Image (cartoon, rainbow, N blue to C red; front, side, top):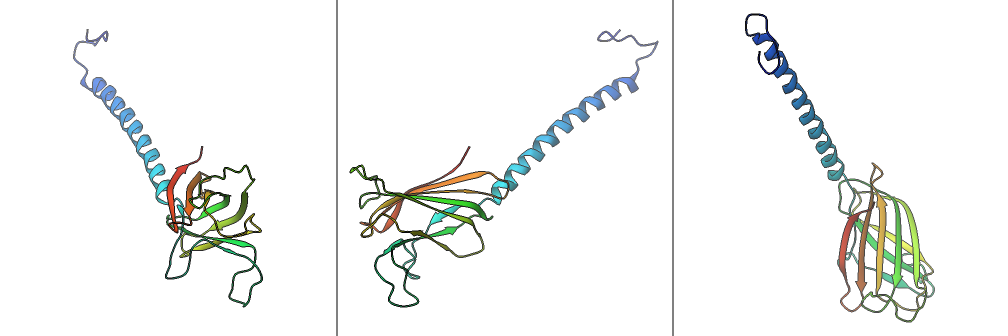
Length: 183
């Protein structure tokens, strides 16, 4: 008797081998399943979008505010905030919602209790385009000021992502850039 098994008169190596083979097959199936799951996660993350605000002085791409009448066809329209962004990820950003909250010159929230938010929605931003300019119509501004921006968007699998940052008119740069997965 071996481990509660009773054999005829001989040690049955075929039976023991079959049990060992079955256990090995179960272990291999479990490992394969976890490897496939990990591969799916890596594939999704490799093709996810990553939206970042853009400043490109050479191409004059920077956040700007236009007030008054446009003087030429190539000039910005009046009363618009232009926010250039770039998708540096490997997949398209879908259902893009950008919320801008105006504040002081450093982009920190206003301490005056003034409602200063506005929002723009885009269907998507391609990862193949060098940049996209989001246009916010009629922002509550009289001149360019600092602001904080939140960009909410999804990848093709429906996973939500969020980019947050703030823009300083003093340094003419974005600060505190953070990219996270939304739950």
